[in-house]
Each structure stands twice: as C-alpha cells, then as structure tokens.
Image (tube, rainbow, N blue to C red; front, side, top):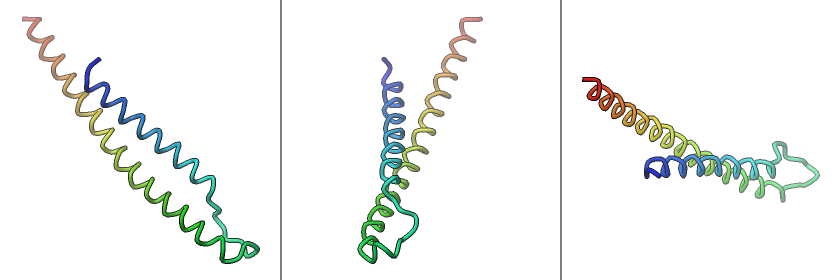
Length: 90
C-alpha cells in the first residue's frame, strides 16, 4: 500500500473517532440546569462543556487537515496520471 493512502486513512479514522467520542460525551450533557439538583450539578456540566470544547477544537482542526491532505494528494496523483497519459500518447 502507498504511504499516502495509509496516512489519509489514519486521518479519516481519527476524525471519525473524535466525532464518536464527542457524541458519547454530549450524551452526558444536560442542556438545562435543574433547580432540583442544586449547585452540585453545575461543576459537572462545566466539565462536560469544557471537554466538548476541546474535542470540537481538535475535531475541526483535524477535519481541515484531513480534507486538505486528501485534496492535495488527489491533485498530485491526478497530475501524475495526466502527465503519464500525455507522454504515452505521443
């Protein structure tokens, strides 16, 4: 296998893993603060929100890197194929 294909697949798997991890953490989040739970629920929610912010930051960054990597590698392979096909046609 080509190293570029392996790196691309790893990046895609990491982005998917982050998305799944975010879903798991978001299930613990309570969008409304209930007065029944009192103040004790607020630090837990703050911790969950902080985790979500960190996961979102890395998820966005790695998604942009993955998309850029796939586009650049795809363009390089397309260009190489085009050059090779045009030299064979001569």
